[in-house]
Image 1 (cartoon, helix red, strand yellow):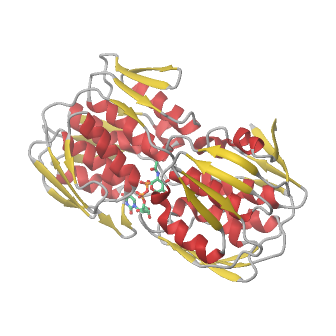
Image 2 (cartoon, protein in one colour):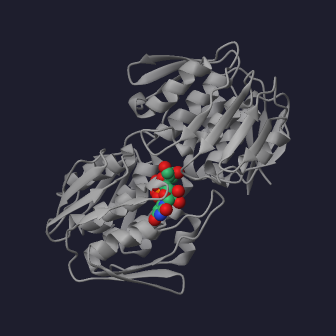
Image 3 (cartoon, protein in one colour):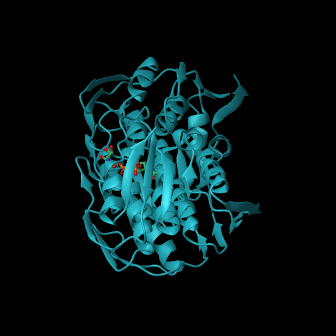
Length: 421
Ligand code: UD1
């Protein structure tokens, strides 16, 4: 297992290019199960999570190869409807093979993903959706077993206690593409990744409209074909670099090749914090203010403040000149990073689904342990601005979602290296 060692306090300067979106790529990869024809995906980020999805697709009847930066996905004629526990348990995103396998093969058995450190991760909305489309679903020995003749279009409300579900919407949208008649998803997730999946499905011959809004309408078709598609940039990676640039003294970073409009909620908050963000063509130049102002945020589904940059934002709030509150309504238990940030001198306490952060003048390097993907990013950011040395263990979490992060940071002037533990 690797660990990352950071010598903090270096100003960061230069340009960083944002990679393809992890959360858009995972369901798009799953969508290739809807056709026997070849699909080509470009700008796929080379990450642990995309590799896990590729392995899962191979186990489900796909031959997949890289041709430089293109990912070529072909059918090997032996479809398998069973998504095994070993793979699904390492990555929750694998749940999005449920809809495509069911609608294409008429049956599927997908391991329940289980919980993870960011909290309980139910799948009731996924099951509700496929049942509404006519599938018979049973849970047996840790697996969701779903069977159906051709699915039938319907109107289905997919809102849960915490709002819409991103992958739930993705699953039902994919299932509905090959269903008979029209499906209307109400309270659909509006995340750009759902929109991107719908665009990819339409390239495959699906008939979807309303993506990006809470009502998605899908007209079922008999067959989908192959497509050649370029993945868009990762808004969460971009947000992470923007926050890092905004909290690192004397830095001046250009973050490029992504769509800043997808981060309007972050832009709004950063203005109040005092961070200077200059929007250039397909890029932003970010400079830190003299003093970071404390600004409270609450996470919400898109276009609200993303839960996936809550931990990174907390690292920034640790260094303000006052008190702020960060509340997570999407994953109210996603606070594993608090204890680790406190080991670095932060003053954060948790109260239910909120964290109360008293800003400190500086953080100091310490040995810390990464608990999940975005928490790891928060620790890297804290380490980069801290006085002295930070050692981050279990960095495989980071490799799940940030392509070449140590190389990108090194190019900006960070002192960061990777060692075997
Ligand atoms: C996706 C993202 C993840 C992000 C999350 C919220 C991927 C691979 N992952 O995860 O990075 O943090 O969206 O933006 O794209 N819920 C239910 N019942 C369900 C499903 C979800 O109650 O059947 C709840 C969840 O517990 C959570 C909320 O709904 O409170 C949102 O979760 P959801 O949008 O489903 O997250 P994912 O799609 O799994």
